[in-house]
Image 1 (cartoon, rainbow, N blue to C red):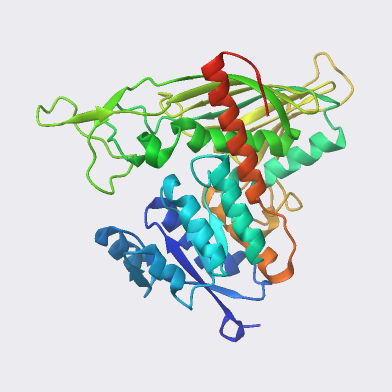
Image 2: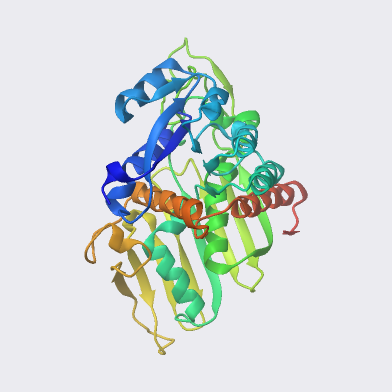
Length: 391
């Protein structure tokens, strides 16, 4: 069926920063990769408090209606699905309002400032009978889906221990401006709310529920230059300029944790936003009684595999993603062509639309957000007490 004959599914995007653009690009690309879907998604509105952000979004994504107040976007009758890419502190209010308006929800992690916020959004979604998904996109990579299936099938034996990492340098520059991400009120607990939620979700996705953990955090850059309104966390200024004023960083740059899963797997998890030399060093190594599987986001279609019955001196092989792994065939015809970050968001969106149109739920849910938030809270409790904390 041609696109023109399909019913339109109207999307509104709240938050016209980088992630808002990522969502809009996924909406535009969806039918390139999923022509069998029974709807035609279309961005019809955007909301942001900054006129420049709204204008930039409209210039890139077509003739969309621009709202200063997100409430006006939610009230727009053309909007049937709302993308929430606003600061963390707004997730609860917006998410609940979207559900109560009877609209579907595509919301970025961490879904608020804590598990109570995520739970409130989940309750509103359930009461309204709408569909929702959360931006835990790393689980969508076909190689990660294959790794999970291999672990479940026993390809590496019984999982014994793992190392999970989400290391980045996006906040490593001391001149990085004091955006909302560095405040408790708007960004929550720094690296925990940002990459920590991804890491805990990825660990649960691969190895099952988390039972307990002990953690340590640190803030390595304790003050940053004051930011202009709407400044990106990638922006920085010359800290030697005497006219620059500084403010305190309120949340954490670094997290390390020892985790025990409900199945008895021991996990070492490390996250940082100030890791000089590490650019999006996200991934995992899972050891089992008979083998190992590892993945690096920067080589997204590859797995390092050691499988067999040799135990000692068993070789490690390089596996390239192929059609048949997750959604790989939707994007590439053969092995060795890497998937991108944006591809993972297209998959995320496709699974939301599948849930909307068929009721089938395959993507990350608000319960996953609640579980990640509880892990973050357990880490903070462990830092406070110096003790292991049960989840």
